Image 1 (cartoon, one colour):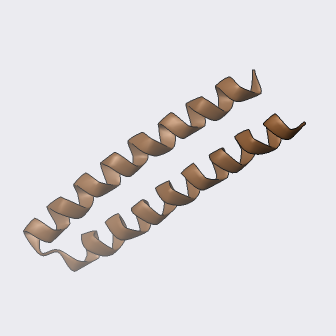
Image 2 (cartoon, helix red, strand yellow; image 1 turned 90 degrees about the vertical axis):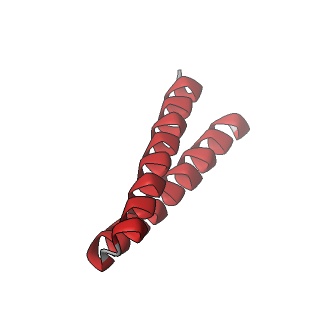
Length: 63
């Protein structure tokens, strides 16, 4: 069950990353600096989410 939750978290983080990258592209196209900062922060949040999920899955495997 924990692995399934971890995989769901990983999928959610990946979708968040895809959305953040699209936002980043739109911000660059529109040359909107505030949206660019927001999209960059969203990308960092998505990367952190993926890293935390992977760490959680690995800890569960060691138990």
